[in-house]
Amino acid sequence: MAQVVATRSINGSLLCPASSGSLQSRADNLKPASFSSKLLAREAAKKKRQHNLTAAFSRRRIIQARSTGVEAQVIPVSPEDTPKVEEQFLHLQQLGDTSVAGMWSKPTVRRKTKIVCTIGPSTNTREMIWKLAETGMNVARLNMSHGDHASHQKVIDLVKEYNAQNKDNVIAIMLDTKGPEVRSGDLPQPIMLSSGQEFTFTIRRGVGTAECVSVNYDDFVNDVEVGDMLLVDGGMMSFLVKSKTEDSVKCEVIDGGELKSRRHLNKGGLFANGHNGSNFSAADKDWDDIKFGVDNKVDFYAVSFVKDAQVVHELKNYLNSCGADIHVIVKIESADSIPNLHSIITASDGAMVARGDLGAELPIEEVPLLQEEIIRLCRSMGKAVIVATNMLESMIVHPTPTRAEVSDIAIAVREGADAVMLSGETAHGKFPLKAVKVMHTVSLRTEATIMAGQMPPNLGQAFKNHMSEMFAYHATMMSNTLGTSIVVFTRTGFMAILLSHYRPSGTIFAFTNDKRIQQRLALYQGVCPIYMQFSDDAEETFANALSTLKNQGMVKEGEEVALVQSGKQPIWRFQSTHNIQVRKV
Ligand SMILES: Nc1ncnc2c1ncn2[C@@H]1O[C@H](COP(=O)(O)OP(=O)(O)OP(=O)(O)O)[C@@H](O)[C@H]1O
Ligand SMILES: CC(=O)C(=O)O
Image (cartoon, rainbow, N blue to C red; front, side, top):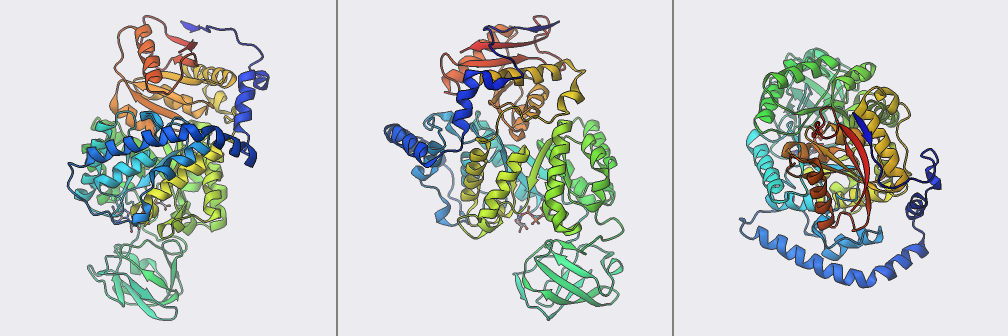
């Protein structure tokens, strides 16, 4: 039986949310901060800040004390990247977040758009994983094109250790497959190549000199023609093919630069015979990596160069056969995938706009249009969507971003991405923590200007026959109208993910009794996942959840929350199947 319980009367029409006083005041808060309002807010916060900073210092001391038992690790980043405590919290206060002293003060709480960080040499230590998590990382990405299983294992273990210690702020793990890509081989050190000089790519293994480097694709020589233009990393360097032998391709450097190890090669179009979306099953390394992910119970696979839905079905069948509950994010990065976008996304749990390769395979001017389209499609289909690559590229070497990069993040947030991703910025950049902080601050600021109720027009349509979708829709409407957060109980994550797709303006506090689900939910826009044992009694569980939120400073005494109990298999079926309530904390 469906039941809707409201413990207070709702004035005004749901269709005219602006008539609600609480919404109006929230709208006022969302207005872009003027200089004067910023100054007033600063004045008012001045006293509080003194107190908060003292608390922040003690919290930092606790964190430092926790890590003192750990063997010292070399952090290969600039010392400037270590944020000063004051600096760390000031920007939150400027954005109106005055709850910086509590354990829930972690930036993840208020920000809705999640941050994916690629872990590499700059960040693969215990200290840096901890710092990234405290600065705002929600998902740790492991790129299987680099490193080996031992190095990735170390990172997975560290993230799991962090999660075990910080139960309120868990980090999801995403394993990004190498895919059927063409890469140059290892070099003892980067080599400088100048325009006009000759350079050779060879299919011979293990070559890495100043004149010649190996390529990992046996059909490379057959696939390349004299006159072709080879692009490194999507165009950072380019090479004109001048001649071929049985095992090598001689080129003239057109756009020179620094060639490093394992660089991505494109042909300004497609390589044939499987590179650029070959059958996924053809890539043995990918299967080894997938199994590695199953063994380590990662949360997501990001699958490279998906060209059709078959690849996703194949992977999902495999995961079912070994009882692995891992979600599949398809990377949209090959020209072949574009005509099949709808079926690929339907088969998956979400998509990544992998702009690096997308911009190498298709004209770059198509990338922003495709980004908008892929986000729109994912949101209308209730799938997660991540925007990736070059978001803060200049911060690999500089401590501040370009203004264009800041706008890029703001656009992805406005378009409604679940997450924005950092690649080289956190993997091998000089300022990984500053990059996360910029992403956090820009996302938060942009979100503050987005008005409630911007759900995709056809989302409700697609789901209108399902009871839980109807409840997600109405819970969103109710919480938007009243200006409350939403509290939801979920064993599979389904209901929390569903709510996230409706993009309610308040936080979705998702209580789950499964730690893996808590981790998975870290990717989803607006969801704050909380682990809690459920009791047999629904009422007792609700009360526990509300007191947890209150005790941790997530909601205040007297505040109202919209509480949703629904889903494919409601938890307390015998008590009530579906209900939405408004409760006073
Ligand atoms: N696990 C790792 N070990 C060593 N270096 C890494 C690792 N992960 C990333 N890197 C470095 O960081 C760079 C940026 O990471 P990113 O994940 O964007 O890889 P990419 O090779 O540039 O592109 P793609 O995402 O298409 O694989 C890499 O080119 C590599 O130099
Ligand atoms: C992320 C990635 O693989 C790309 O942008 O190509």
